[in-house]
Amino acid sequence: MNFEDVAAAAGKLQESGTPVTIDTVRDALGGGSAAAISRHLTAWRAATATPAEPARAELPANLVSELARWAQQVAEEAGSGTRAALALHEEELEALRDAGEEVEAERDRLQFDVAELTTARDQAVAEVAERDEEIERLNAELRNAKQVAMEALVGKAKDQLAIEGKDAQLVELRAQIEKDVAQRATLSDARLAAEMELVGARTARDSLETENKELRAQITALRKKS
Image 1 (cartoon, rainbow, N blue to C red):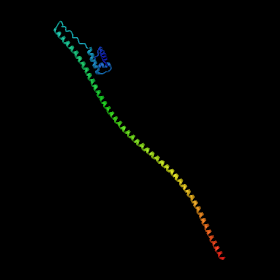
Image 2 (image 1 turned 90 degrees about the vertical axis):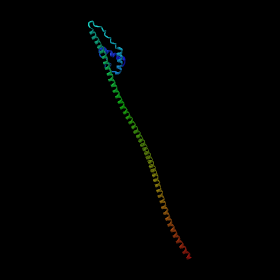
Image 3 (image 1 turned 180 degrees about the vertical axis):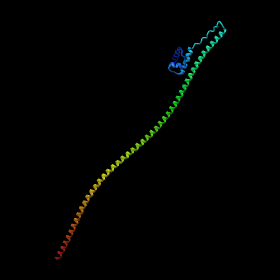
Image 4 (image 1 turned 135 degrees about the horizontal axis):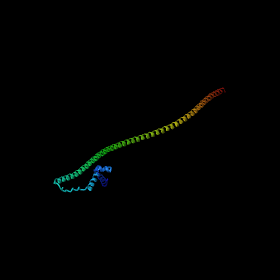
C-alpha cells in the first residue's frame, strides 16, 4: 500500500461526501495497516487542504450591532471548522490507539505461541535424546545377544565335532575290539589244538615208555635164561 492508493481512496470518499477517516479509507481499500493509512492520510490532507478564506467583513449598512452579530457568527463558523477537524483527528487517534492495542494483543499472542513452541521443541529434543539412549541400549543388547548366540553356535559346533570325533573313535574302538576278539578266538582255537596235540604226544610218549619198559624187562629175562 502506497500514498497514491490512499490518496485516490480519500479523494473518492471526499467527492462522495463520505467522511475521510482511517476506517473509511481502509474499508475503501479492502484492508491495510492503520498506521500506514494514517501516515499517508496525513500527507494527503497536508497536500490537499486549502486555508479557509476569511469572510469579507463588510459593514452592514443599517446597524453596527448587525456587524457585531455577523462577526460573532463568522468566528463561530471558523471555530466549528476547527472543532470538526479536531474531532476528526481525535477519531483517527482513537483508531490508531485501537490498532496499537490490536498489534500489542497480536504481539502477546505471538509471544505466547513462541513460548509454547519453544516448550514443545524442548520436549521433542528431550524425547529424541531419550529415544537415542533407548536405541543405543537396545543396540548394545542386540550386539550382546548376537555375541552370545555366536558363542553358543560355536560351542554347539565344537560339541558336534567332539561327538562326531567320539563316534568315530567308538567305531574304530569297536572294530579294534572285534578284531581282538577274533584274534583271541583264533589263538584260543590254536592253543586248544596245541594242547590236544600235546596231550596226544604225552599219551604216545607214555605208551612208548611203557612199551620200552616191557621190552627192557623181556630183554633182561632173556639174558637171564641164556
